[in-house]
Length: 551
Image 1 (cartoon, rainbow, N blue to C red):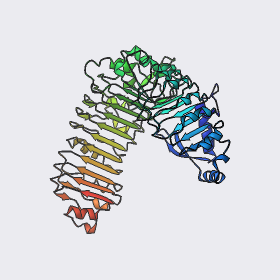
Image 2 (cartoon, one colour):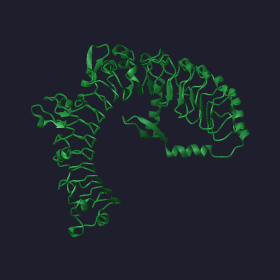
Image 3 (cartoon, rainbow, N blue to C red):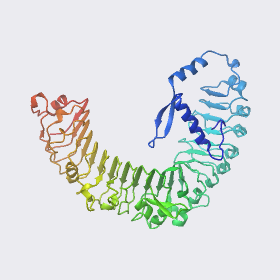
Image 4 (cartoon, rainbow, N blue to C red):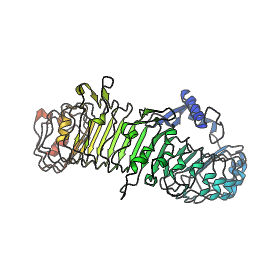
């Protein structure tokens, strides 16, 4: 795209055309997929070995610098003035790993892509503003702190990569780059005012709401081409629902990941948070939702029921595309929304919800003859720092025993839920990884163990004060257990038999259990009991084994 090889037409964007070309190369095995994102989209590719060898053989040879002519693409690790001088008017792409003589840029009249790859670069040469065809500017590997005002004169610039930890602020003239499609910056960089004028933007990772004109949330209203991820911070600056609606999030169908953040630890009135969140309804195609610092006692209707308005149709649409949901630091929230009916939800994380006392059956949604499975594809559930949570209820409707709940749940973490004493007993048979940290009571773990787990590969128990023993069947029923950790359980008295049968065990850690008196039969050496913990380490089939402070 940066080279200008294709342009958007009425039906296709440049990015979509580029993806089509990539897919052609993939289908013909000229490229191979190296990495996908969590949604299955291709993130990076590598060249096929045979194609790489062919290119290498063609390029192999030695040349004098003055013999290299009509070069369009140059990657230089050090200054090679002869190559640059002889090819200045032909160059389309220049990737430079060292400092470069700034006076040379005026000769690169056809340059489309310019990348700096040296921390020694601390400022941009004024000559760069003469590169009227420049489409891509990459300063990520530089030490530049401030971009010059003349950046706003690069009217054809489409991509600005500035994810540099040194960069502090963008210039006010950025608003003049009406063709800018992708802006990459770090979270600490201060955006310039009137970002809403950049209506071609597809990539804007973060927007901080301000209280001055040009920095308010309404700047997002005109950016309906945004795609991928958007993080909106400082939502406490938004006064009401009407102001929040000016962000026009429901009209951004290509936005897949949305982070809505209020300042954590705010003092004073937070009652308008509910109205603001009501006005921030996303499009129904959203796949990842994070809500952080929300100060309302209850979530608004679209969040509570996971349904949003169908724009222009007067109806409601469920957020069925959601794959991941995170609620964090919602300190006044008293109730968890209805998540059980989300057909594609794979990960649910609840952090620091300090006012939630119970998770009720509404959490699962309505159950009827048509809905016999809730949380149908959920793979990971995390409950962390819910200090008032006493109970996670099961389904209470008629015929609940016939309902399948969490049929694909593999990872469960319960941490810092100090008063949790009641947990469903029959949902957990698919678990592979179970982590219970700092929960005082053994009751939730005992409830989970009633499911008689058989697929565990990782088990971590930490700071459970009243646990005295573990189920006798634990090791015999989970032959694929590879990691077993139990720490700071002051009343633990025995480990059940069967450790020696775990041929898959790679890591064993038992620490700070001062009352541990017995480690059960190993299942090896004719089932002879081993009283010495170090002997246990030598007997268990484990490549890494640590036991400390067990006596």
